[in-house]
Length: 226
Image (cartoon, rainbow, N blue to C red; front, side):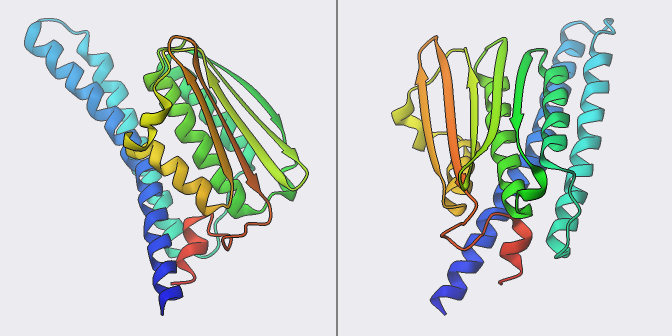
């Protein structure tokens, strides 16, 4: 019974991460755009500059609905069709560069066919949250992401050259940071964060192919056990 309860808890935690990293992130970005447009309209009722903000927000809300439908598909089907990891990451970095107007340097050394689908999904979500945090909060004009395969592991590096933050306070941080730690733990991996004031942040994640915690890397695999 305890094992079954633990599986249910893991499944719910992973669902929470999925909702946060997907739908909530995009819908929040849309809300910010709409709030900015509202403020512009109040301060300058005759100005038309808020139209661009509204159009961006509409696009983001459309994306969030698409993401919500994707999550529902994953939650109701045991078979998910995914693009290769490199393709998903390339699409993500292109989207973030346009959205935030910064440079993202990309380096992938992967053999997608050899990566288990659950591990591929976990790598994508961790990379997604790390990149979004860097784009939103670092105030860096440049971000770097590198992913490579080594002996039995995948290694992910995300670096920026921004404001940095106090690493000891990380456990008090936002749900996004906690979600990264949770995903790494569920995948049986390791994470190291080096952040220095005005010099930037470097996050390194190492995830094993052979997950000692039971391959609870994706929402669908966790739900199948509940």
